[in-house]
Length: 350
Image 1 (cartoon, one colour):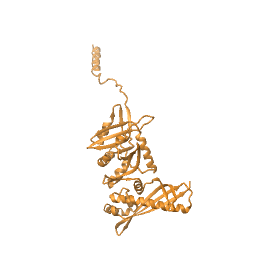
Image 2 (tube, rainbow, N blue to C red):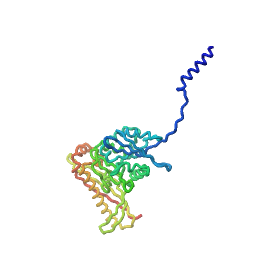
Image 3 (tube, rainbow, N blue to C red):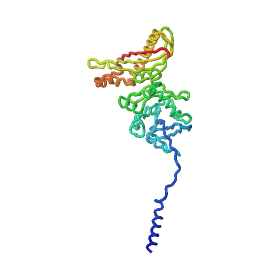
Image 4 (spheres, helix red, strand yellow):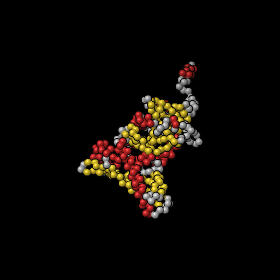
């Protein structure tokens, strides 16, 4: 009898626990989409997030889009896209619209600094004169196109790019930033200008020679080509490189009187010129670069925005005067006398 009762009790327990002891159920595997480029637009208090993967192994890139009251909300909405699970752990580039640069940039940077998933070395760009929908398309691999631009910037063959870390540091310091600007030209993505931010807000675009001069003034090393004509009328195509800019504060009687800037340029011409002709050519390069730097500095002073971070460079050259420079900079930068000297060294022949 006891044996029968035990058997019945066991059967009852197994029947009552059948739900909790059931075997794991097989589920359909999901694809994982790793986002390489994140776009952020802002309108009417709403954030639109655009996300793009890199096309690999011949596969087309995937594009996702979602909206929310914040970037965090928009990203959360985009994480579950049908059969795709979207991941943001390796975002290499972040593109903001002009509206987002105007109204949402500080919040975006704050979120990025607090979000452990977001790399602070991701490159930050602003899209100029176009909608994000125009670049976030599966027809072209946006991640690979931006990698080309980023590689060129890191190699010095184009304007320097800017990371989230650098942008946050500059805006926190004095609210001034040169934000790399992307444009669309016949479907191609180009990086030829900067959006200058003053007090954290867009102030003006610096293009072409002004953008390059501002980058060189900030201490970046940039390669470029230029066609130069000597006083004798002989013209040549030069490969030039900015090798640095030294900034020294002119201080006397306890006051900041001005800045002395020394720019170093090296270059090559692939022709055999006489030493005297090369010397004349160096003089022309000095004059051209001097004018370009003067124009860039005049623009920055007119806008009242130290986009080249001259204050920090002056402070590094004379740390014992940092307190004086810091105190007087904001009030004096726009009218501060600036003395520019250019050194040029050219080589002739292959």
